Length: 194
Length: 80
Image 1: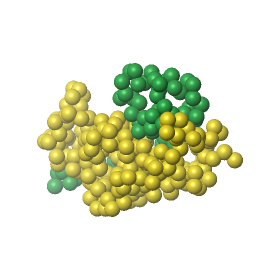
Image 2 (image 1 turned 45 degrees about the vertical axis):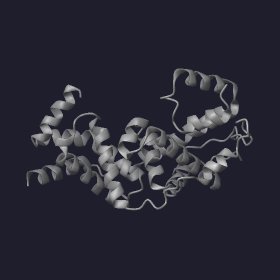
Image 3 (image 1 turned 90 degrees about the vertical axis):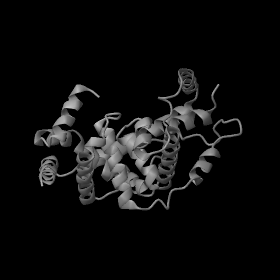
Image 4 (image 1 turned 120 degrees about the horizontal axis):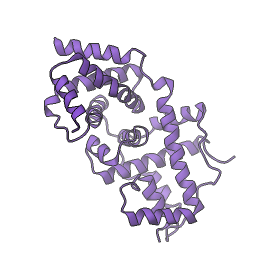
């Protein structure tokens, strides 16, 4: 742990308002955005952020500094989000989109149905709105991994620690999320060459 | 020589960063010769960029006084 973070933790343990403000200023907006990215509406995202920081302050004694404060906070968010959802019924172990992906290659692993060269996503308001709809359709764990890896740009190792699985499973979940999103966007006519 | 399926799956799983040097070099070599896999890579990047843009959009932002309100609330609860 770097000295700066150690001093900050000392301040937090001593209930120093300046230390609380500092950790909130550094991380609260990212936590809020991540909660929104996980599909929670604004009021729930604010509540979740508050719960995350309260839990963080209450469990400071257990924080040993083996991960960064940011990763620890994302871990708490993961648990709080799970508590709110209480449903993993939609998690799938095998995925139809994975099978569809496999069929795009021949037995030697060469493309049978290659990506369309002109195929690209245009960063527009319309595309963003369609992507939001597609994200809503992802199983919760895939959505969380996609959010943490692609939007919050955390490492696979950090995401594995946060969601409690192996780094290779993080890769599988990210792969499935991307395939599903791609299929969803294609289905809505986004990103196809015209 | 890695196949298109191996290269595209590895990229889609985000496993390139942690892959051994020989694998990263093999992927780079493959990409230099395969326009389909390059297109697939661009699709992955575009998807991530769009998701980041969406996340950073105004509706994903908390109220302006969010941090101040949260800090005060935490401080109150910790003091009580």
